[in-house]
Length: 570
View 1 (spheres, rainbow, N blue to C red):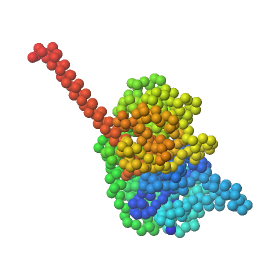
View 2 (view 1 turned 180 degrees about the vertical axis):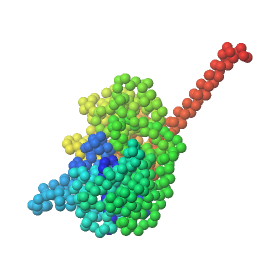
View 3 (view 1 turned 30 degrees about the vertical axis):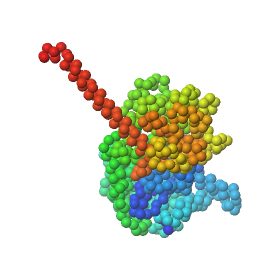
View 4 (view 1 turned 45 degrees about the horizontal axis):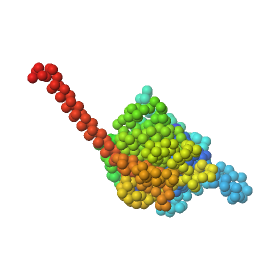
């Protein structure tokens, strides 16, 4: 029988429940347990697929096409697993399921209510993963939002009921709460944590463990006070101090014996985890011998969570290349300003050793992205385009190299005369926006000898997608004649998946989202290759700078020897 661990949060949101849940999953898996994580979100959207990045951050897509919360990305990266649609549940999905049953008459005329129908459906979903896979040892369920939110009440009530229905050692509760540090007073305050736990206990859930998120270590006195007023052993109050890297968190919890105490609470007999390889990986992240700078040109740069998987993929790719990757954020709308000339572009991308154009939707900032691509192409700066980044690259190359001055995408201009990007055939006539794009894992065939093939080292790959528009095949021959290589296509050859410019040091764009499959101990091949190209570009720039410095010294020395003073002295 599987054990169940519930992770909740209080006081404020964005405390890092997802990182905490993923870290516990990491530790339990390191102990040899089969662990699965799931995220229950209380909002009424069926999934985050139609939500603005400013509202929700990144939409993380799974192999089966499920559009999910970004925390599922943390789950997959920390536990090196592949999740599916059953690992993410929203209140909207719960109500959708219940109302469908009601319309079919499955409730036999009974009044449909929050209790028991909504809570029963939530409880069914808690056990669904373990019921589908009897080898699972532990199910970790993170509840979105904070304790006290109206939206979260059905989920917390379902957990209360679920725990009553199970044996004592079959479930456990971990509560994340804020312990603020008041700088003016020079001390931390435990009251917010006490009130948060009191709220949770008022619902009927006594937490078994507390993780105290704080800027400063909480200390033994505060730990004793928190344990006393929150009704749990002092050893079950853990320090969740800010870390330099999220990948440090599992080690920090392990040093506090969290995983051992959790296994005791759930009566799980395991060997001690071997964290050596994980620790070596973290040390590589924290202490890189060198650094490269890569510009990310997007339109959601004010909210970095919109590009969370890309940020993590650069961290992963830096490890095998023995560098840290500094990300330079450039708002694509700023590049559209008519006052931004070539000199200003040089200033913006100064000291950048690579440029990445991420995915997105809509025409805002598109011309700025196209200008950045042209700058990268003409100045031989390593370039990588993802999804919309590929489409913008096709537009830029179409206008400048192919000679299609009005080249554009029908997404931005339905009446344009050269739609080098157009709506996919199976998307025509689609009305509903949610869950209707080309989603999930699809196969791709690579061209032997291409840069893409050299990066992957294999002919057949599978990558995750999220798009409606594609390369217009009517223009493929013209692009190939201009020097473009379509190095990756769908198995039938109809859909362009990867394009590259062999004449450029590194110019690659893909229709899929490689960032969704990158892992800290296995960097994605394309991100790894991009960072490698950035390192080469940096070395070339350094060599040129050193050569120029020597030339300047020689000129200065020659000037001194030819000066009147020097001649008279001679």
